[in-house]
Structure formats: structure tokens, C-alpha cells
Length: 321
Ligand code: GYE
Image 1: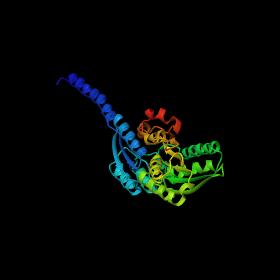
Image 2: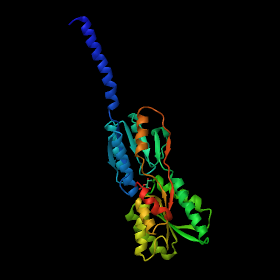
Image 3: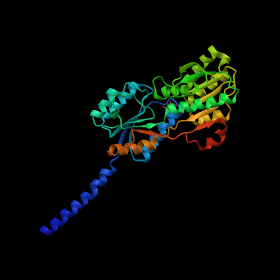
Image 4: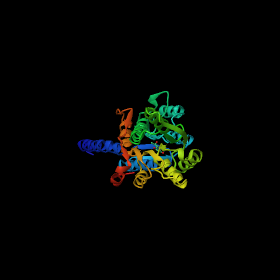
């Protein structure tokens, strides 16, 4: 071949290669390993859907593992994501403690970690890039403020409160309890007389409420449930005991799922504090930044409200979960 022609051809091949390679690199899908807590509540189902939908929309390959509310399953899933060399690991930790070892393994493998929804207690904060989720202490405070206000408007009578806690050792159970207590102690007539875990599920919520009713009967004035599902389970128990939920027993809960709006419209639940499960879009955005080495805030908080029963009918059509 003529030398000039050869140069031109080689040049063209080079130009083609340099045009094609960066594009091919950019098109390589981000691979995220995600370990979900389980499917314990309406909130969780909506959270899973949000994460899966956003991954699809963003062209992210999502390796999804359901831990069925067990920490050992999450540890196993994280180790398997490390072995598969995913680009990033995200997970919603079922409980706060016991994560140091496995997160150190991820760090040693140079795989960044993002926490969604729930926080962890680790000695080294560099073990995760960011936590995307709600402020659970503030949610507990919002529930407490609603009740303080209710007590004031209702003649400031003494109120016996029973509390259904979330999963033992989980961030939302610890924080929602603390935030609520911090606020209600301003009124000494408000007393938590029983408190027990209902593990964030309807079945357990119902079971524990039955036990509360057996031991306390009509002396229960208020139920504070750490999530709507437990409140909905408890509503059944209250009705089966011949009492009127929302009237004989005032019910305050957290999440703001559709089931809670329906219960409010039926007059069986008094208020729900919103906790948005729609974290998918924020997770995908943060994951991309972290993998590209761009800075992200260590704490990304979700915007939320409080919905009393009198706005339920108007709000229900706007609810996405
Ligand atoms: O409130 C509850 C779910 O971690 C915020 O977990 C989440 C909680 C949510 O099971 O319904």
C-alpha cells in the first residue's frame, strides 16, 4: 500500500477508536448490589419498588437481595457483592450495630458503600460514603407534638399511652422512641404505661396490642405505633376487643402509607407522620457521584410532613405509596 494511504487509514482507525472507546466506557452500566431489610411493611414494599424503578430508569444494573429482617443475611449478601466486584454496595441496615467487620472488608476491596433509610453505629465513619434517609428522631418528635396538642385541646386529662416499638435495635425504633419521649415529658400527665416491639409488622402489632388490652383494658387512652402497619394490626385487635379505634383509643403512627390514609378516612386512626420511602432517585444520583469520585453530603435527608385525619380524604389521591 502507498505509504500516505497507509497513514491516512491508520489515522482514520485511530480517530474511530478514540471516538468509540469513551462512548463504550460511558455506556458501561453501573452495577449496584443492594441488600434490603425485608418486606415487613407497606413502607418497605414501596421503598423496594422505588429503588428497582429508579435503577431501571437510570440504566443501572441492580443486584437485589432480600434479608428477611435478618442481619446475618445482610452480611452474607454484602460479602457476595464484594466477591462479585460490584461498583457500589448499598443497603438498609436492619439494626444499628455489628457492621464494622463487613464494612472494613468492603473498604479493603475498594468498593464504596451507601446506607439507605437506616443508620449504623460504626467506629470509623469513612466506612460509608453517605446515609440517605429520614430523620427518625424528628418523626418521633412530630408524633409527640401532635399528642401534646391533642392533650391540651382535650381538657388536659391524664393519658395512658401504650407504645408499639419497631424492630429491636433498629435506628427507627431507637430514634422514634427517643424523639417522642423528649417531647411528651413536657406534660407529666402523659405516661407511657406499656412498651413492646411489634417488629414493624401487622401481625405482631395486632398480637402485642391484644396483650396490652388484656392487661390494661379500657385504661388505655393512646396508642403510639412506630409504623402504620403495626397501627393497622392494632386497630383490628382494638375492634375485636369491642372498642373503637380512633375514639376510645387515640392512635398516632408514622410512615404515611395509603393504608394509614384509608384508616384515617374510616375514623380509626388519628394521625400519621410522613416518612418517605421513595429514596430510589436520590440513591442512583449519589451512587453515580460516589463511583465517579465526586463529593456527596455525608447525610442526605428526605423532606416530609404530618397528616392529621381531617386532611386524609383530600390527600389520599396524591399519595404515591
Ligand atoms: O417506618 C417501617 C419499616 O426503616 C423507616 O421500616 C423504615 C421503617 C418504616 O418497616 O414501616
